Image 1 (cartoon, one colour):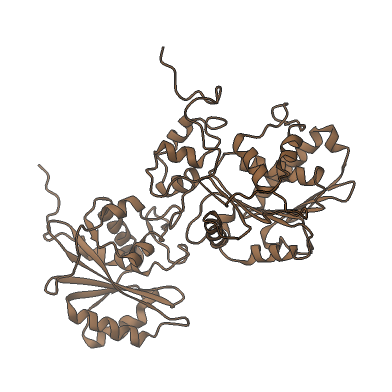
Image 2 (tube, helix red, strand yellow):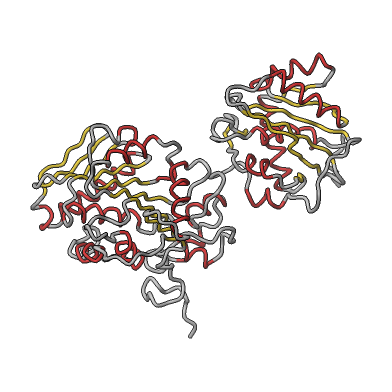
Length: 492
């Protein structure tokens, strides 16, 4: 009789088990740990959902041990900790139990919890309250639960407090918290929340800041900075950060079972492999961040990274000076960045796209200087027109026209059509590019926004990054995808 290899939910010795050890972690230290105290403590608590005592999974036990190493003076060795793990692996459960251990086991006087959305941290708050109310040994120490707009609090009879705050007011009125729990750190796009909370711990005797997240993108400012430190610590630097990252090897196929195991340590315990298989039809960027815990340029990008890679020209891609050429100029909404791109037809119905030049100015790009640069480029090739948007480059175009340079505005419905023409050309591999690093970066940073009529367009502001080259590429795709004759489709 052939046995189904995925029976680990019932028999954990079977093959498809997640990795207990994180793929990337800080260099282990030979110090005693208080983690076993937490493990033993949580096993005395009844889970109100199952009616059984909590029991940490293997990866949770390892994390409890390793993140709670203590120095000879009794303070935590890792006072900043990053826990990076795929969705639905028990991160929130671990957080709840760590908060309870701090309250009832270690006497941490004040713990603060915040997340990108208050509803996320509020859900944890309600679960912690439910656990307390369901366990006699805990509820006897419970005093009161407070709730106000943007804040929730549980207080024990010895003054111990667990406080939930909205991220826009997380540090207001707070002094010397023992532990800070920051959830969904990938969503923090600036330093404000992290800086305001971390600095409240300057007077804490034994502080710990714990960041929980899955993988992010180029805009995950705090997470990316902490990960750089975590990678350095994993390589042996003396940074005391505790970094524990369960993630798949970069570049692995999305259906690589080894990658699933690396990023999902609860696989075979609480996650069935069939559930991962069922999610493989989702957007690739979401699969990589949510299920494989891999960093991407943009979550849910307008252009699929794999499709873009398949359009790379094999060889050296250069423009022909005699070939009809279309160019496009676009400026960022803040006018601090711009890009000039060009396209030419190739054999068959293919066309190539080249990023000619990028422009930056910390204050504002000068229209005259930009127009002069574009004029030089147009003379190098047989340029038919320079496409632009009236919203961003109207002033530049007004300088080009008197010089005899043809310009064409691409806005509104035509812009939406151009975006669709570009995407169609990429998915069909009719668009070819030279694998330019800056073009790749801007293309994979672009996100799509919907038109009211069901169409879509590249959102400059929504992308959260410079995508001038991508917008320009869409504009010139409108010209490069036009058929050579009036007859493009033959029926019969």
